[in-house]
Amino acid sequence: MILPIDYSDLMILVLAIFTFVGAMRGWYKEGITSLCAAALAFLVWKPAVAREFIDVANNVIRLFVVLVKAGFSLDPDKIVAQAVPPDWLLDPNSYRLYVVLMVVVLAASYLIGDATFHGKITPLGRVLGGLFGLSNGYVILALVRQYVMDYLKAKSEVFVASSEVSMQLTDVPTQEFIAGYGIVFVFVVLIGAVTLLIAGDRLRLPLK
Image 1: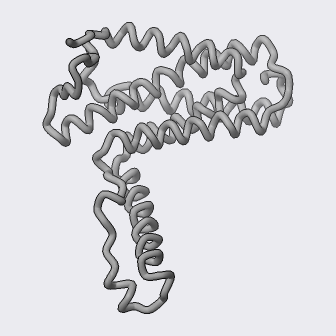
Image 2 (image 1 turned 60 degrees about the horizontal axis):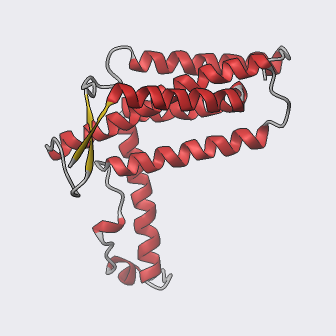
């Protein structure tokens, strides 16, 4: 049994939730999340950079596993003799890896925002926070769609049903998020967040 879900309906729901959360958090906290979302979008725009980060992480994992297996011995023969199971390494083609990374980065942005702002949120701050939340919801949903599209392209699969009851998105845009005006939108939001951060601190504007 397949339960169809229209992509536009999902987008409206996600945007509404992020707008509400952004208004509750204020523009300062939500602006930090915007910076992190822009960084994630940059990795999609420049996949070679993302692969370099993954390669570095895999090298760290290899080093740690080899040292543990060798009993933290510095003997070159013992170290060379150790092997690292491929399943223990990060797969640069796995969309799940990027989704997990996105969740971790966004969670970190929430913690940073809560830890660095303890003031009272003004009405203007809530309005700006709602706008940032709206843009963050759009970028995050577009990134998840892009991750899945890249994964399906790599696996040459269209749809996979893993259970008797599954959900299928319908009318999903096939245009890549980084194509067209997607990355321009990200840069506009990024510039807006940085500008407000500078204006709020240097000019002491009551924006927060």
